[in-house]
Picture 1 (cartoon, rainbow, N blue to C red):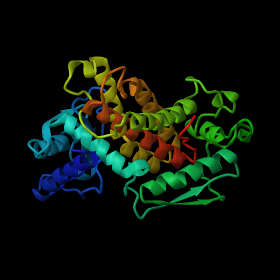
Picture 2 (picture 1 turned 90 degrees about the vertical axis):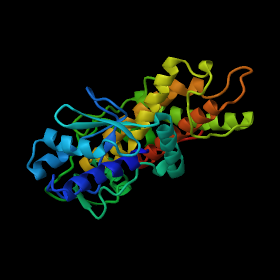
Picture 3 (picture 1 turned 90 degrees about the horizontal axis):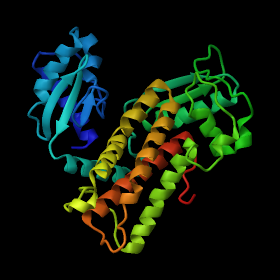
Amino acid sequence: MTPVELSRTVLRAVRRAVDGGELSVAVPQRAVVGPPGPGGCGDYATSIALQLARPAGQPPLRVAEILRRHLAGTDGVADVVVTGPGFINISLDGAAASAAALIREILDAGPAYGHGDSLAGQVVELRIPYDVRAEVVADALVRIVGSQGGRVEVGHREPVNLRPVPAPDDPALLGPDAARWALLHPAAHDRPRITADHLVQRESNPLFRVRYAHARTRALSRNAADLGFTPEPGDVQGDQPQACVAPCVVLLSRLAGTLADHPRVLARAAAHRTPDSLARHLVDVADAVLAVLPAVLPRGDEKPSAAHRARLALAEAAGAVLAGGLSLLGIDAPDHL
């Protein structure tokens, strides 16, 4: 079950609760699911019970328990646990099959993975000052909101409703890509740094890590083609004990979880007008994929296996997410770096 399919499953549970008279609310258009937070468990979690509690006139825990009963026993769902103030944690059957379905979904969508309709039909009016950072943030939001089906109208009139802290120096000296990153990566209330650190090609530079990670996933695809194998979503661990030691399995699972979170990050960045949250998410994806790159290709005399093809598919999916995210920020994602 992919995150999109699980989201629909959660909505069906809400609809059944409404039809049964247990909840009196309008069924939302979308249920956001993502990796469990601190104190959570399972494969995914959703905060929809907290979202529905107020309109339902019931405590979040009561709403969560109602939905838990409707989710339990659903095809593909192994267990449902309520934690904290009302988070619903969901464990899925066939975790490997679920991960393969996620990777296949990302590869099919390409850089458009995570685009949705959570803002369909909505027009967002941005009133900004005449300031370079405000202009760049608004430009990124045009694309991010558009990825969720909404439309942005940008104007320079009072009262201003988008005023990020201005840059202390002219960012144009950094070049277009580094300048945009310097203005978009910090939160709107933080003063951006306009320094040469954004240009250095080393691990301390988040922009370099993101673009390097994308370039490395493209290089892996070329190298795999030279070795005569192509990506195929599947079990990244493989049947052989030596195929992937435990620490590697953890890193691969972390990468898959980070990719699964991408639609939620995009939807929140659009809803809350925070391109910085997308930029930080891309850094998380880059760090996760860079950690697993050594396990993707066969080593020495090792023959390409189903596990190698599955890991290559996972790496290519990460590359698609990085390319799509950078494009929404207006930053180039080079195949060679």
